[in-house]
Image (cartoon, rainbow, N blue to C red; front, side, top):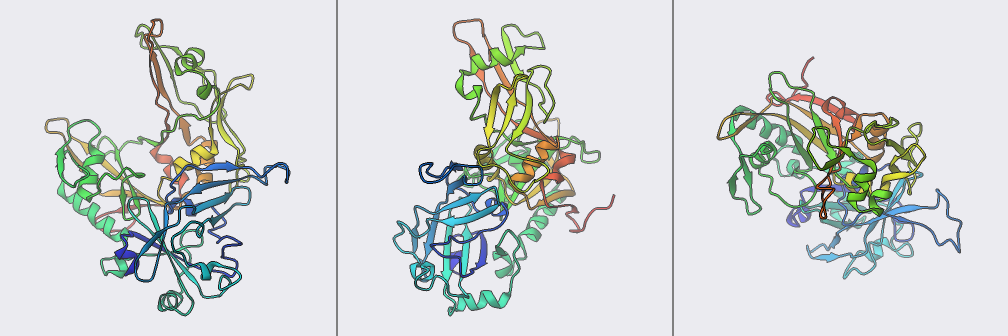
Length: 449
């Protein structure tokens, strides 16, 4: 198969409408779901119209991000489309595909040119995603066998306007979901596993530090470090969670994102000056040290820093949309913005999350060598998008929990360490997903309360 030969691990199709062409830009959905299946090659940027030609308002701004996209010809040759990008209209909401012809060494121009065949019914766009985050596209003409086969399947959209074709099912190996559950069942049956990690070349190394549970699970699943996004098993994000004891799992804390602020005084001041202004003396009595930490929840003043976490450009009462120039903010009582994360920054980080995530409980031994075992019950989340994250922040499920410190701050060479993190309790994870389930990996059936 053309896409499998090109190295795609996930395959999506879209039945093109007459308006899906170069002039109108192909429509990729009236939600932000597609952002979680198409890897970005750049962070989102806010794009404002030329103010000399058009009044700049909340409704005229948009966001854009580049894709590492190439076209496949019918003989399997690949041609980079260097200007391919996603255009996001967060006020509608709407996502469109742009720049996919300009600069490409070869592209299906006739089938995308509105003055030629760009309005022909029956065209089918195939999108393949590789494990390294690159994307390949193939556009099938209405009369082609590929298009006829795709229409014969009459697939319903599963993510935004796209239908997913499971390459494992096509190859007769069962669905990606089934394969994941079989592997997790095997790992559960194995029992205690000595800590280990996979190198990029596929060889194993010993892993004995306290955070090797995730590396051990990835090694068992054969997930190689690739520098892109999170551990990926055929489109599933794998999250190992240390629950203390499998027999009595605790409600543990999950770290979701770790971006530093990109606006406000945090980005304007040296970090040492920021901590001196908003931090506090170390509460354990360690000399010559100041911290900036503590749990910051939406709408509540944090007593140690004096700052309140808020959202500008997002209304929980209209949770499907947000302003392109909006931000998550930390502000003082008088409204000074101490730190802010623009929505463009947060959205770029959230895009690295997969549309599907598996949360696998683990327990570690106290002795040496350190060993891990993995639970029989796993949680699966499917269908997430950026407004769900904003809604979870507004609902106080997700909170800001920094670990920023300044040591030797009275000396000539103060030392700083910055660690920003957004976290939540595991019991609230379902708020981030459209579909949430708990499954017994041995039976594949939902667990009973």
